Every structure is written in structure tokens, then in C-alpha cells.
Amino acid sequence: MRRANPSHPDQLPLDLTADLELERVIEARVAARCEAESVLWKFRLVAIETLMMGVLVAAAGIVLAQPAMLVLRAAILVAASCFVSGLLLLGLSAWSARLLTRFKQWRAS
Image 1 (spheres, one colour):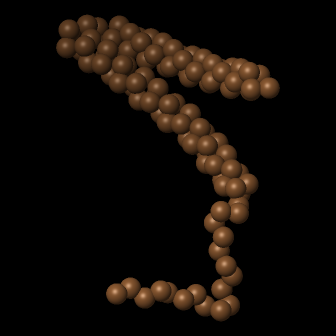
Image 2 (cartoon, one colour; image 1 turned 180 degrees about the vertical axis):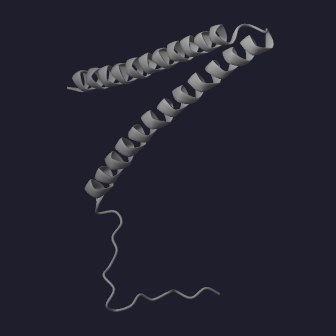
Image 3 (spheres, helix red, strand yellow; image 1 turned 180 degrees about the horizontal axis):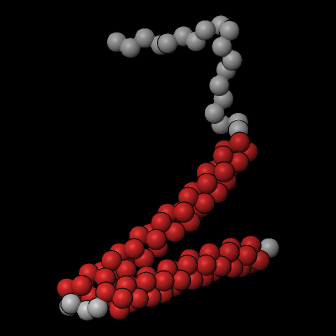
């Protein structure tokens, strides 16, 4: 048999249904934080991809017994182009998300 747990007389009553405004503010803050962290994680993925592509090109050049300077130049060129294209995709993704948000707001009003 379960006993009811009486609250202390000095304890303030907790009403969880009354603070819808507070819940909305908390949700907005969490959404903003998650969006900021997602941009950082996307940038980390671009950086990891850049490093992996450069190392793969360098490894392929070494395995194929190509001159060291040619391999180094090719690895740097591939890594740089991979990095730039990743940043371009991040920028286009952020721009399109912002545009879609404005379109939804315009459509709602």
C-alpha cells in the first residue's frame, strides 16, 4: 500500500500548467542553442572531411610512387577545394533555412 507524501507546510505550491509563457521562452532558448551547436558540428564535419581527403590523396600519391612535391601539391589542392566547397554548402544551407523561415512568417501573416 502506497502512502501519500504530504508536502511541508512552508513549501510553496507548484503549479506546472500556469507557466506556458515560461515554457515557450525555454523552448526558444533551447532551439537557438541547438541551432548554434549544429553549425559548429557541421563545421567540424567539414574540417574532418577536408583532412581525410587530403590524407587519402597523399596516401594514393605515395603508394603510386609519385614525386613528393607533386603529391603534396595535389593533397593541398584537394583539401583546400574540399574545405571551400564545404563552407559554401554550409553558407547556402544557412541562407536557405533563413529564407524558408522568412517565407513561412510571410505566409502566416
